[in-house]
Image (cartoon, rainbow, N blue to C red; front, side, top):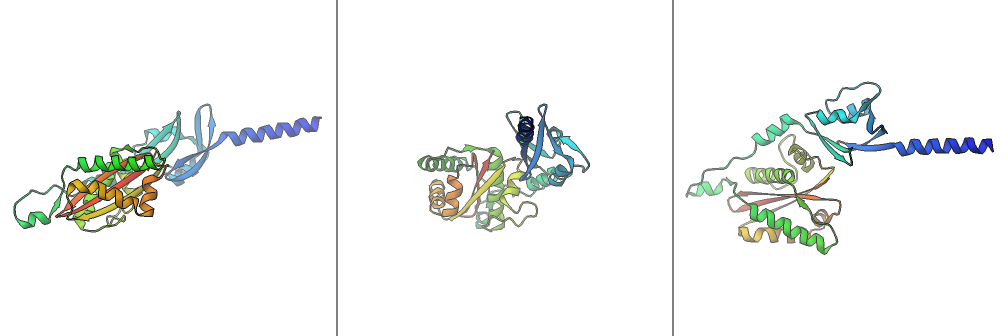
Length: 253
């Protein structure tokens, strides 16, 4: 009887330890922490390894210290920190400084070859609307427009137009990948995705429908658009001459 009670006690102890061990996503890595008195305690060494600029050391540290870190973008759910991403202010400033500037318009042909940045809100909103119609048809919840994802998408579309390339990979150091660009825009999305499209010689009124139809007919783009994991969306448009460059960014929060 006593032996059974001992085994029961050990089992309950192990179960309690297992239940208290949870994880938080930091820079895309799942790191374990222990919840004690409502605070999330994590190994300082592990945190320093995952989060740039955090001082290494021994013992545990309260994860809440990152809330006041100017380079941390912290997401909380039900009072607990569930995700932290590094936000490089210096790189973000570079991102803003390097964005193409609006060109003065003139009637000559040279002006038509320059990058043109205009008000494409109608196109952007229509892409969001059509995307959500496709998601509803396929049993996925609608996406919410996100200004941070929109900023990242717009920056990429404008850069593609300015430098005349078409790729998910930017030639600009520090923002080569979609996830880097989305992070630089200030988003703390735990998962991201990107669709792009380019159209030449088409009317602006037709762009949204052509883009969504094209993405739906392409298996990898369709997977992004219909992925039930994503919760938010941001659209960006850039133009050079008669060519329009479209970017559709997705995020999961």
